[in-house]
Image 1 (cartoon, rainbow, N blue to C red):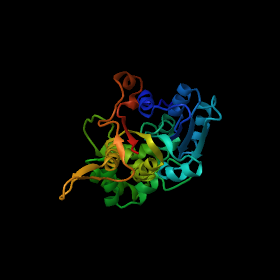
Image 2: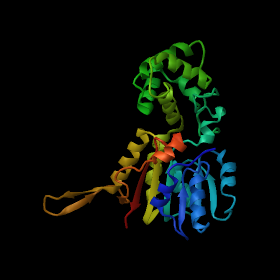
Image 3: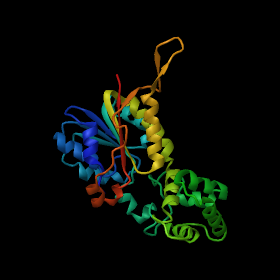
Image 4: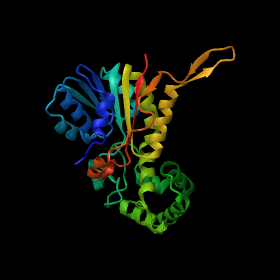
Amino acid sequence: MHQSVLVDEVWEGLAPRAGGRYIDATAGGGGHTRSWLERTGGAIEVLLLDRDPAVAGTVGEALREWPGAWRLTIGNFERVEELATAAGFTAVDGILFDLGLSSNQLDDPARGFSFQTDGPLDMRMNLEQGRTAADWVNELSVEELADVFWRYGEETESRAIAREIGRIRTGTPFRSTAQLAEVIMRTKRGRRRIHPATQCFQALRIAVNGELTALERGLDGALRLLKPGGRVAVISFHSLEDRRVKQCLARHAGRWESLQAGGQAWVGEAPPVRLVTRKPRIPTEEESRQNPRARSAKLRIAERNG
């Protein structure tokens, strides 16, 4: 079963209070929202978003004790401002983005996210939309595929892997996760700290779902939805995500610049925010032991200024 990460740290950072309105922009298994409803006795309103229609049953089961306190909308958090406005959630008190895949998605071979078990090479968050990972692997040029592995996975052997994929696919198109993982492992020889296919699979998942573009647009929209004093919390799981979160919040935090004529002017993007976490919060050793998938999580929080 999926275990939400940094639950206590998110609770402390967003500080949900009775009568408040909150958005869980990545519903997943509903773990964070459940924590908020338990601790407030269901005295808040929560809008949950998720691009994966399959979460509906899981969320409904997790939150069945508070039927009137939440609602679920299926949609990409890239459109959080549009979706929240349509649901009447404007001027909200807090918004959470938990960017990790749920264990339910990772452990389902049919979704194609994992190289640990064989399944179709899919990787779409929403199985009804977009091109599959197999489409990307079989149809991109070798140069484009190498660029994907490097840009989104920081894979140092991206060119060699892409060339080998290009050689093989001329006779046998890639259809399964095991097929792709085996080629990557064979190309990347030698002992490694992580599984050889980790970075390439990450890169394909990000590319297939347009995750980094969605993150940047979603964060900007979320900041506009916050009321003054409202907070946004973002949990990322790899350096590419965390870097973009840090950069986005820094742009909105802005800076003071000296003027030639004297005095200072604030320079930054609107709406302005205050960084609550100068350095990201990370899981405790105990949480990392209990839930190994939490080890790479980083939490950043910002508060909208008046």
